[in-house]
Each structure stands twice: as structure tokens, then as C-alpha cells.
Length: 564
Image (cartoon, rainbow, N blue to C red; front, top):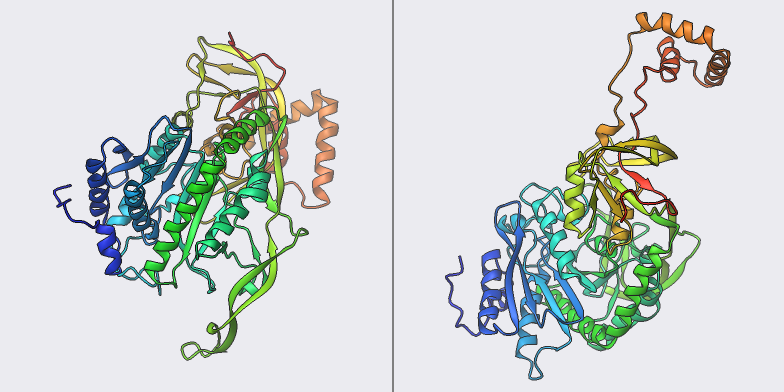
């Protein structure tokens, strides 16, 4: 696979850039293999897992593994957006060729091409009107999954491998390189930062007030002015933009669960490919220099972030934009106008590049928690949910096994109201849990079930994946749908006599039954079957476990079962 000539002075990425091209997967790996062969004492190229298409996933590292500051860069999660593929090969080559040598205090990890299946599906035109390269990969992976929606659910082998690698590499800063479309504007590069309010703790205010402004200033000084990602509130950016909320399904949102600072670079597809590559590489340089300058602060804040999180009694698990907090942004755009379409005969939008402007537009970038959940001392995960346990272990979660069958009083969550989307989204029918109740109940545990204390590095990951109302919790991605289903029912013609006997023997039950019918009648009368079902669910025949969330909690202040 690597039988290529490495003696040439240029990499495939550099030669390709001159021809408006991006390397294939095998060419990119060959470029990194050549760098690793030429600099064995300072670099390595290792396989960290397998992709859905059967090809190995590689991680190229520069610098000592013992370095305290760690930066991870992921490329080609969408292979039709390959700016980072070319930029990172050129960046690694430049770092290795620098007279001063590699920084001694930083370890850089580069994923050459994450979505290999999409990268092997080369085409010229699925990204309509993109200005180069002449040929590139496809957005979906070998299973037609968008891997930038898969970091929590891990439907792909790519994502499960990435979870393990990310946990082991443990980056302080994580960068995912992309190419955007949408509105037209002047800058080549836009940026999605880990949303500071969502990141919260000590890190959120610091990146908002200190680090991010330095990144923008550094790019401006380097001749590559950068603006926030253009997520327009209206038809054009003139009406304002709102920060993109990268929840944990997305790469940087996933990184935030491990208290990593995340950035998604978005080079604009209407700019020439070489310009997009250059801006992406420049960002990596600026980021590296600033990260080195602020390495001590980053480490101390990340440590404080984790400690403070463990001290919370209640944690946010979903967020919403604060529409009352409106800032402004000096936006370098192009004048938008409307003209009659020769195709549809209706009005169409057009940006006039001969009419650039710089003006203030509204900018919404304040978010607030929309849902919270109590932080327990531990979660209890029955071994039956092995797919969940596999994902927890990929993220470095440690647990203890219940040594023998037993019963323990735990906090049990009942799912009172929930709704699933009617159309599939990334292989699932996304489920929103709208209302829950919590109560202490005896729970049957079996030898081998898992007790997972929150006092561990993956505490935030645990909270946002195991709290059923989390925006990207396992519950939202249908991992526990079978627990929502009632398994035993009744035959009305047989249960009729039982229901009559129950009501005659229990006057309080009869009063409650009449009240329930009266309440329902004001809206929609209960059918005979619904009336019998109301009684059935208060009978000893009812199983009482449908819609019971199968992950249990040990509240703070309670002893953790089998704790030594």
C-alpha cells in the first residue's frame, strides 16, 4: 500500500495543491509515512483503529509523548472538505523543517483522513459550486453516516475507534478542519469555537474573554482575517448571525465532555482551494503559538474545570440561545440583492462581490441551560446494556462489578413524556424526553452489573450521556427504546370482572377512578379500554417497569454499593 517514491522533494499534498488537487487516502498516508521514516526520533505514524470500510485509521504524532501540552487535529470527517488534509501535511513538514526544531513542550496529533470510506468515494461535483479541488471525497461514510453526528452514538467503527484514541491521547485543544458553504462574504476562514457558555466552568469565560480574541487578532496580524462561523438568522447575514451550538454529537461538543477546548475551522468553499488551505494552515500556526504561551493557564483551568464539575449538585445537560442577549459584530460581507431568476421565474438571491461592505450586524452568542439533572455519586448500569458499556469503556470510564445478586435501594427515573421524530436521522429516530420523575425504589441487581462512580475524569461525559434528558444522551439516540415498551397486557372481556371487584373492594380506588374519568371528560372522554387500562395499571398484574429508565443512580450523600 505504501510502495511509493519518498525521495521527491514535495509531498503528494504539495504537488496536488499546485494542480488544484487533494491527496487520496493512500497518498496522504504515504506522505505521513515518508515524514515518519525521515524523522523517526520525533514522529510516529500508528494505527489506532478500523474504519467502516475496512481500512486502518492512522494517527501521526509530532513531539514527545511526555509533553504536557497536547493538541489533536482531525481531518476529512467530511472528505469533500479537504482543506485540512493538505494543510496538515504542509504544517507537519514545516514544523519538522523549522531551524529551531519542534517545540519541546508540545505533542501534536494529526488524523490524516478520518472518514476513509467517504474519502475513497472520489468525485468532482457533489459539493455544488465548490471552488476546487478538482476531485474530492463524499460526505457520508461507508454506511452513509455523517461522522460529525456520530461521536456519542458510535454507530460507526470510526467513531468508536476515535473515542478510544481521543481518551488515550487526552488533548488539551482539539481542532476539526472543515469547509463551509452558505452565505457569501469576504473572509476565507470562519471559526466555530466550543460554545463558551456550554463549556462553562473556568474554561468557558477564559476562552471567551482571553484566548479567542487572541486567535482572531493573531489571524488578522498574519493576513488571514477570520470571523465567527456564519450561521445566519435570516436569508442573509445582514439580519444577524447566531453561534452554532455544537452539542456532543459533534466533534468539538464531544471534546467538551472531556474538558478539551475545541475549534472547528470552516474555510469558505467559494474561495480558491489554495487560499483555503493556506488559511487553515495559518490558523494551526497561530493556535500552536498561543497554546504554548498559555499552556500553564490551560492546564490549571482544565484541572479546576474538572474539580468544580465534581462539586456540582445539579449540572446543565441541554442549552438554548438567549435571544435577549444581542451583541454586535463588524461583518465584512458582500451586498445582497434580489433579481428575477431565468430558471424559476421567481426572485433569487445574489451576492455582489463588486459591492463589499463592513458593517455592524446582530450577533447572538450567549446560551443558557435549558435542562438540568442532579449529579449523583454514581450510576448503576445493568450488564444487559452492553452497547452502552462498550461506549463508556471507550471513553476511559472505570467501573466496579456487582459481586453477587442482590437488591439495592436506588434512584429510579420514570419517563413520563417523550417523543420521537417521525423521520430517520443518522440511522435513528431522535427521541426527546420531555418529563421525568425520580423516586427511591429497591432494584434487583445481578452479579456483573456495573457501578460507575462519578469521581473520575469522564464525569461530564457520564452526566451528558446517562442523564435521560441530555440533548445527546444515549436515551436520545434510542439505546433504551426497548425499556419504554410495556410487555404484558390484558384481555378486556376477562379483566372486566377483575376491575369491577377491585373497585367494589377499594372505595379510595373507586373515588380516584371517577375523578380520572371526570378530568378526562373535560378534554376527551376515556374509552372503555382506557378506563380498564387505568384500573389495570393499579392492579397487581401490572408489570410497573415499562417506561422505567434502566440506568439507576446513587444520590450524593448515599453510600455507593460495594464501595470499599
